[in-house]
Image (cartoon, rainbow, N blue to C red; front, side, top):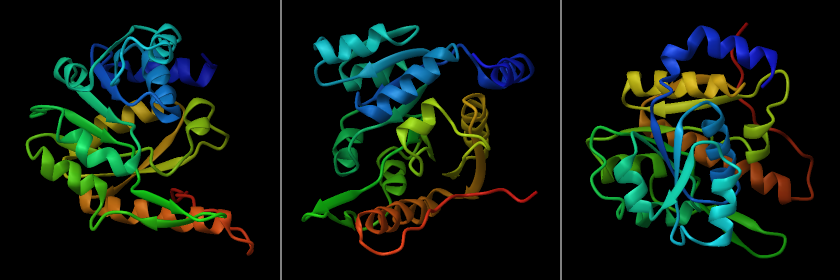
Length: 227
């Protein structure tokens, strides 16, 4: 733990709510990054996997503090906060099979990306944002779009100056809680408004990836906060 993080935890631990149980749905790179980070912050982590007893999932449990694994719906039922870290085009199917999530915070870290061709052309795979799809599927939960604009490597080892990620959601208290967690990871946040603004961040990722795979001049897309 670095000095900056230690000071943050000392000052803001009441906001971070260490007693929370977090279900990380997905065991790919993003699920691994967020699970290990939140476990390191003192949360109890339950990885939601279709194969909770697989060698891959158990290996991830072993590298995460305070962690276990279960089937996705079982993990979500035990959690206060659910993190969606699944392939974007599977998100709607996954959330529709997680049971009743009323009163829980859902952090949606997904993007609806469809890849075709070589080099790949990326298209937007849904008719509305995944953030909105998740909120409609669970109208009594508090959905916060977060983490979908940075790579998993930055979640584990944020560069300096700290990256800024946008948070979109309809509930201010949920966004404030997620912001405190993100900032404890060494990442900054900016509140961009209601959940429908997650459409903007998802489209940004499509535009960025198409530029990345093109032969043209490269650009970067980053959020910043005014001085």
